[in-house]
Image 1 (cartoon, rainbow, N blue to C red):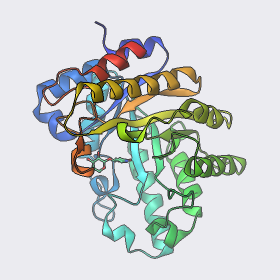
Image 2 (cartoon, rainbow, N blue to C red):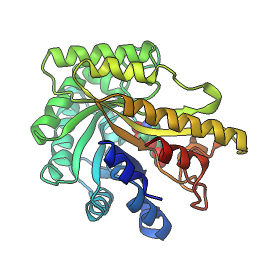
Image 3 (spheres, helix red, strand yellow):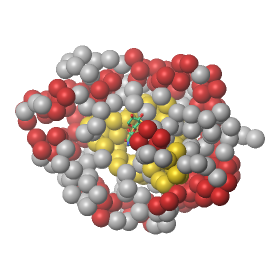
Length: 315
Ligand code: XIL
């Protein structure tokens, strides 16, 4: 039957995946499915600071270009991920004083966003990622501890200056339901926009786990952000389970994927859904959550799972 991207396009939404450069160059099935099923691509790691500017002023775009070229060849859009984050950022950045750190951030954003500003595939960026603690306080990252909260507005302004046409997003996890963290995100986005800070979009990572339940107010939460005038998007969905797989866990997982797609379809301002990879052969979950896995829509042998069918049928 028709690939996911064809159904998504007919609904006016994107269906995306995160891609890793290793399997993209080594595995034919990985390339073929990535090209066929999806119309939006996020680099899983290749655009992060440690990959693009490992040493100050020395930029390396080899992995990022690999992703962008693949997307261009396959008529896919690229969502840039990510400019300012507390993880996967080199030690040289973390050790700078305030003035030097702010100018390093400005230079990084201007070089990375600027490289793709005239590239038709690259249309959006996660400008800041994971700036909140679970209780809704701003995270006490090296960014916050050195620069104070102004680093967030500055990052958006630098990104806008580097590409006036790119859609600029703030992205986080555990903000899918209505809770202290998502309400802090809501208040920050409203306040930034009141100050004319160029925040265009809010990304909801949606790293879900069947044992923790589905955020049943996802649609309602997306709607309250949409009412602020921003685009919303599901940026990194996966649905992990405690291993081993079983058919009942697969069914629950499939229902979660279905419900995520349906929530986005129900909200006009929701641009689409990106899955954080597509095959259990290459997923961050087993490396990150002990004893958990099988979070994606193809198994480790590239066979479609019930979750694939659920996404397909929901679109
Ligand atoms: C993860 C990647 O999937 C891993 O390969 C890497 O080792 C660590 O980062 N939130 C994000 C993503 O915004 O960048 C993270 O990606 C997953 C959590």
